[in-house]
Image (tube, rainbow, N blue to C red):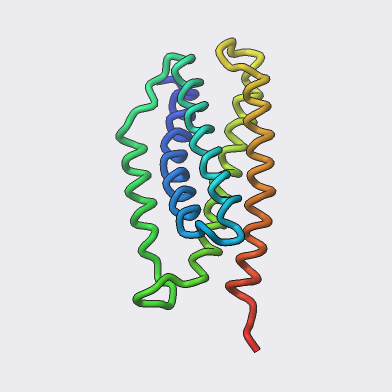
Length: 160
């Protein structure tokens, strides 16, 4: 297996867990002041995963199903973190999940950067499409930073 195959399969697997997280976070904030932004980002992350799959197929790569399934399981296990509450969700969880989303989108952006660096040498990699995906990741990061700031103030600010 070529290194690019391994690299893309790892991004494909990470995108599975990231998409599950994004959808769950968006659902948990539906109807709130940040809900629409999170829902839009989750939809875009789903579209980005489709774009990655299409790129992999253009390169005759099989995205596989085993590693993404393991990553999805790990994402679900990650929900079982101590949060200082036994029966209900902690506001700290909102902040931590947003930070995980930001990390995932940053990793995705780095992946688009890597593929852009290869686009001149690999005919199946469309530079203009990769640039569009990178720009969208930048926009997602900006929106997630704004949501993160709002949730930090709401969740972590000391009460007087």
